[in-house]
Amino acid sequence: MKLNVFLIPLANMARLREKIEAVGMESIYHNQTDEWSAEFYFSTTPDPIEIPWAKDFATELAALPEVPHNEMYYGAYLWRSDDICFAISFGKSHFYLREFCDSDFGLSMAKRIGDKDDVRQKAARRYAGRSTKQIRSYRRESALDIESGESVDYLHAATRDSETWGSWAKFGSSLLLSLTIDQDGGLPALLRKIADELKKPELFALPRTEIVKDKVLIERYDDELIDAIVSKGVEFEETAHQLVGVDFVFTSNEHYFFQRRRAISPQLNRLGMHELREFIDQNEITRDQIFDIKIAVVREDSKKYSYPIKKSLEYSISDQKVFLRAGEWVRFNEDYARFLDDYIDSVIEIDRTIEPDLLEIDTTEPEFNKDLKNRGYEVADRDFTILKLRNYKIEAWDLRKGKTAYAVKFGSPQDLGYVCDQAGNVLEIYRNEPAAFRSIDIDKYCLWLGFKLAQVPKRLSETNSIIFKQKLEAWARKCQTMNITPMVRISRKLPSVKHVANRQP
Image 1 (cartoon, rainbow, N blue to C red):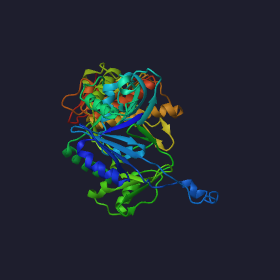
Image 2 (image 1 turned 180 degrees about the vertical axis):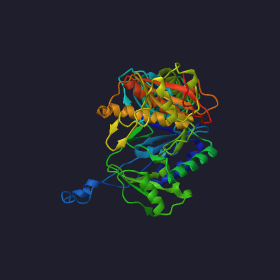
Image 3 (image 1 turned 30 degrees about the horizontal axis):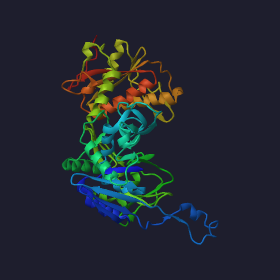
Image 4 (image 1 turned 45 degrees about the vertical axis):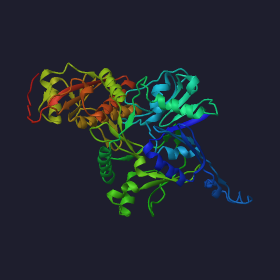
């Protein structure tokens, strides 16, 4: 038997019942034991689903007595005790359960019952660099392989106790078990074992995001998100696939509409911020109404459905470890921060050979680059001849000495993230279009960072900006794939600007 189990916070139970009844499920069975109250909901009369291609071939299908439709049945089994509630999903009901579930549940169970030395599949996402969401499959008995900068969303792994949990399980926002259980009392006993397991210590680290539950913080983050929607700085999440519980939903031939009450947009082949802002302006939607907007999805294999606009957006709160994921504000856990810090401290070399008088900088970036010409550096600032792309002017780097290229940037950790992106883009161009370079005979790429801080960090992990560290990690990993050593020079940018033209070493 396969059981897809969701953990439902008790406070969400009333709203969950309203939802599943609103989408056509009826209560057809109820049972009460000493501990559990169980209720089975089923779609007794599912709505027929149109088959899009049937309209295109109406002539060929004319011999049929009526236009064919699909029917999809679904159900949900709710189990509630005094201290906990579970919902077991059947068919497409996971789409409804996920809105009310504790999305930390599945991976919390993974850290307790999963075997980290026998992982079959992993899904993770990054919040910096070009790669955002990835699914990786492994051979049997492969140890859990986590790269710094990754936040794990899903695991398919063997269990540590096959007699209790089955030989394998899937862990996402829900828990999928495949096992044989006794029809008489087996299910409630299993659910109690799950509840008890959640009280036990975690057995291994798993870098991931966890939900922000502070209502004051959520309101603050929502206000900032609305500001970004009406101006700039927010994008729609990449939708090649979505994880729903433990199921991957891949996009196919889908069409989208923005809608709010009676207002509806023209059909869209892809979601874009320009079209969203146009819909907001044309329908005079105010700030406090933006989260009322829904995205309607039309696809061949299911009935038309919709979800709130907030669930489709990708956004991060500046200077904090907080991101929007599937409509919920989440922050990175300590495992994630530790993996990231360990990587940038161990992989990125800090150049300690920097001249002592350059540990503090009191000039602007262009003046600084120009001054170093007298020290044997080749100045490439504003030199657009090293890298040539049609219709684009791009600086390959600011300075070069021997086989080391230097990209120079002064500012706060947030400002310094820009140079990580720029350096990463240069490497990406070289990997894809090496002919665009006049020469790139380098074996080290150094970011020369001038921190506008009273005291500069001795280690990169000591910076407070999680976004900056993510960008450093993405740039360093790109260097490594191209056999280029990632290096950083750390200076302090003084608050006053005093040009010293003839400074000597």
